[in-house]
Length: 290
Length: 156
Image 1 (cartoon, one colour):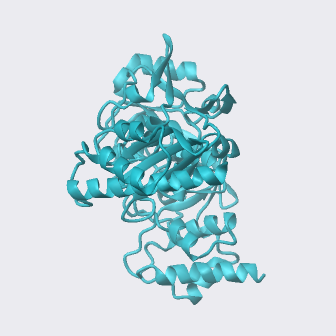
Image 2 (tube, rainbow over the protein chains, first blue to last red):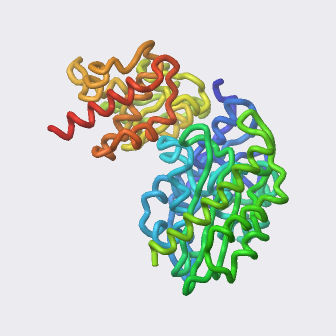
Image 3 (cartoon, each protein chain N blue to C red):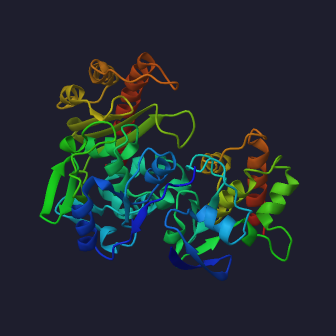
């Protein structure tokens, strides 16, 4: 369908954008890459009074590496991050997930901040952000607030961003030496939303797992961290048996949704398989990178 | 209404558009460039794919006002002197298409992809075209056409 009538503003800087957001609160929608919001408008699932287009705000597309964190401006296009050497070297899990987002044409416009603010539980970036304990920097007329990933996701397509706040930056901790990663997903077609997706990261020190991170996409209304499996893995040496046991623990309490792409039982089975494969792939990747 | 100026297929064009008008509708309705097709109108089918500043985009997921100042290439911009471009010729030779509705989207997507990845193999081409839907061919003839174009380009 054609988009509904709406008012449109393209603020010249962040201050102007924050003024509009502060005034209109949740009557306004922020237009980033538009790859989710424009379909929502076309389908009348979103009816904002005002569209605040932040594509002109170049200050929001900077990338910087400092003190063990990679800070990514919210308006950084997904293809730009995908092609970035800094991302590939410092946050390999993010680099592994980026090529799986939508299709080439979607990544041309789609942004890191837009995807994370939209917070689709089946999308790749929310699982990566949760797995890595990323930090979300939101700004309002009152100043900045930093929200940890575990508090960011707040239900289906919902975040803890207040209506007057703008997501300006997402910070990812850089990978320690010895870290291997994998982002795996099962989808009907390359580029579709995952039926189940898994972000996996293992850090090996002298052959022993010193850090383990697992987060699922597509198994709940928010991305889901598998803390019990992570605890099992730390201190152990990678082995087939260990990864089998981790798969059991990671999926024991999952209660995934059912839809035409798969039943809850099927999703659970796929999730366990992805844990086994993902951990093996991450362990192999750690060997390759060391 | 918002006044915009952009370059389409090498020509400077101007328009006065409502903010809600997509780039696809602007190209078709205001500039009469009806080669760009509109299928699903919510970013699923890929029929409206055009190239904006050297990247493929879905013109139904971009507002016309956002294209102000950009360089846009549509399917009309690929035909030189009324003939076919090299990719179009290879797809013609491979009988890539049937009804033609999805054609401009596939051709623009493949044009952008081959420009960035001239050495692409069949698997990479399949993945690059996975966001475009064709309900006639079963895709094999489309892949054949793009592979043929890539092969001809490599052979010079």
